Image 1: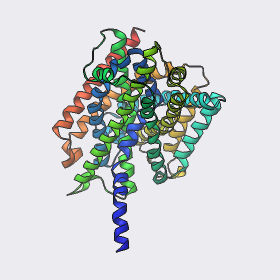
Image 2 (image 1 turned 135 degrees about the horizontal axis):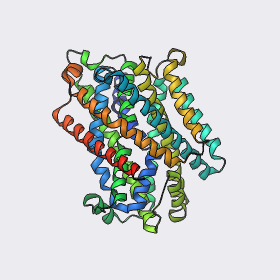
Image 3 (image 1 turned 30 degrees about the horizontal axis):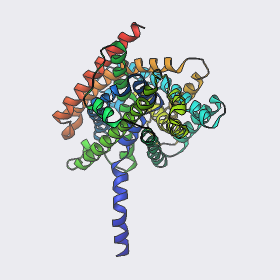
Image 4 (image 1 turned 180 degrees about the vertical axis):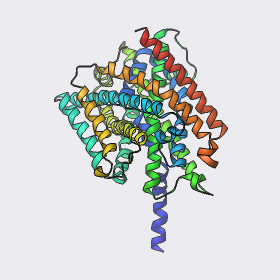
Length: 428
């Protein structure tokens, strides 16, 4: 009787842990220090005028991440391995190369932001702090088994609540902010349009596709389960779990983005600070205007989300390369058994750290990363949509018409964003 009661007591906790996993981590990783910089610039430059973009991107972000998660769980293979079945090998390798390059630049900017943030809080040298973060991230991924590392990633998602707390520490004219979010008044000029493009590109990123698909495979293998398409019956509960996990994760991600835009609009834009080029610059600008507590929360949030995002960026690159070359691609393997996979993780992180010593401005690295991500995103998204609607590949778990329509609209929006991004780059 006692054992029965104990098991019943444990059920709610186990249910929450079972439902929230890859989707939650993926959504939180989207708000990396680079993303924080974009949202901070949006709030500082345009006030509450871009809050509506969070609502615009949410359904499409949910749709495309549902597609990537479904592909991984149904086929039992990562995204790169699935795309290899549709596209020429040379094209897939070219896209993976661009993905790895973009992720490395992104890692470089994130590590630099984390080092600078810690220096702002406790003092010390930026490069020394950056070295600590890069080393810890690499060692955890390479030497800590996935079953122990996965809960660490889930725990790090809590660091993003710092931005919700930050928004609650400043004075916000809620009626003005909510009206702007629901009934926007767009500014018709190039800067406004390009910031909309930047928010869209920050929210929908290729590395998230690769990561979530592969995490579904990791979870499946870790629990000794088979790909859903191999099952003659059942499997619907797994699709339901993916939908709950991904929807919660993406909404959580965009709540954080909303909070950052809200905070920087209420404090920086309201005081005439309209030019913010990095997450740490935003934190520093908040200090004299909103006080030390708000500043510390914002800075610590940069560090926490960076610790979450760097493994995701490096891991996504490693999954892509390993699957493209047929190497073992899993965080569950020991380092000697998956040398190629872990080498990519270490190399991306080490090179990213090394770029901090080259003198290349972090903003330039983020621009290059955005351009490369744009090149990769559209063809990958298009191929994902083809895969998820293919009965031969997905069996009875192919996507519903509603998901397919949302996914293709998201792909179209991303294509428009990429065209605008190239236009802005050519125009200087």
